[in-house]
Length: 337
Ligand code: CP
Image (cartoon, rainbow, N blue to C red):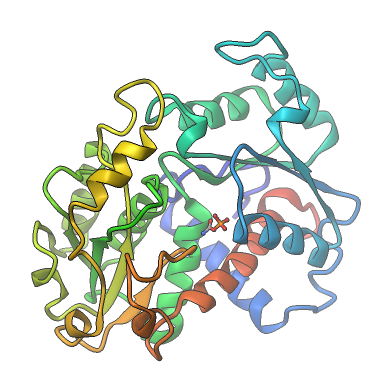
């Protein structure tokens, strides 16, 4: 299978065989982390990391991945690049992408929340870089999707559950003051449904996600003979769940004024204080694993007891980001595999 040069913007755009190839290599790289088989795969190669928004896991895991593959990851911010925007003169994406392709061997982009003026703008930007550049573009989380997180989630679930087919995943909204984007939860819907899980979503009325992603999730579940359901109370979705994924997200009105209304979204979120994953709710599950892409908003999305409990896989999933991204970078950027 030849994945060299392939963009990774959403897992749904890759075949199951392609995703399994990444996961299989990631598992080998996790088992044999410093094997000489991997440590020069990106020798003399550079991964350009373009961050519009801050990060703990994504920057550190990509930088570490480049180091462990014998390459280099270069940190870039828009403030250092004089790019053209809707309000400022500067360099076009057409020019920047083509020049970056003369230096680097892969380009990661993160653009979220307050760096976009409408939902979908970040996705458009990534695809514009992919259109003009000649190196693979990898989403490091943008407004629609977080594909590396999705694969790390799945790797974490498989490590504890084995085959996830037929298991029940609950994705539940959580309260809090972080006004989070839809990327991680939408990617989880796509990955869990694609790999054969029954999917339940629980969220207060008014917190619908992208209808196209929901339709794709339904189609994935139907194709696998699995169920997809939505509930609007904070308890019933936990019944019989094998996996609980709790996360805050903003309403579809978050960008109605042309920029993220963070204050308004936080005020709305605190109108639903009962939406927290706690021990009482987890007792209704099938001894479910708890997962979250992090950073966790403890005390709002989930209690400390659950986030730090024996069924929490949050640190395993965070670690998996490294292994998944090493595999992805090797497959898309290395000519030595
Ligand atoms: N999960 C995740 O992408 O974490 P960061 O925002 O810290 O990179």
